[in-house]
View 1: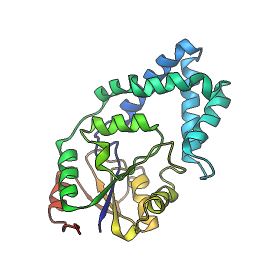
View 2: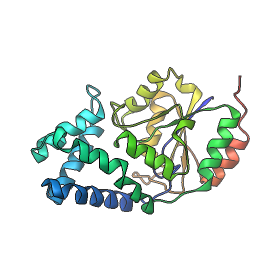
View 3: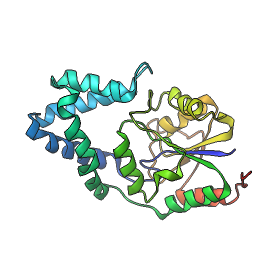
Length: 237
């Protein structure tokens, strides 16, 4: 093994996903009201666009998939909102840091694995633009430059729990799945990595397990995972 893929929200960045999503939707709705968008309709369109990205068949980027639905639902054009949306993700999105936590384990973990020579990837569900993803990486106390890749809706064509999300990462970086491990908190979304041959470790601090059954992967708290990686061999050439 020489490559570690990390989920972001709920893994490297502890959070209550429902609270964060509510705050995010509210902030975006407030930003778009002056542009003639009714908040409930905008939020409904946002969810439909998100559902479309999750169902994306790979024929277009997640960004294109989202905007097609968002435009149709609100009878607007991407060009009309593009500047204000970019401004929102550049500036307003930063305020959402109040709705997440930070664990010292995240930075420590990345430091240990970098020192041991592992390739590092943030395999977050690519439902957000690049700038919003960068902000969330920074919320976690991390630097995006420490990672070979972080997934965004501009650069991705699939979403979790589609196994093709992980296959696309493997192909993009010319990786062997057997050399990789996925570390996440969502049994169904992160565990699907095993369908393409990637092993999986579930961190339980912010566990999501929709099936509520036995977890068929190795599990532990972030503290447990920190102990685990201390025993991993160096892969420096």
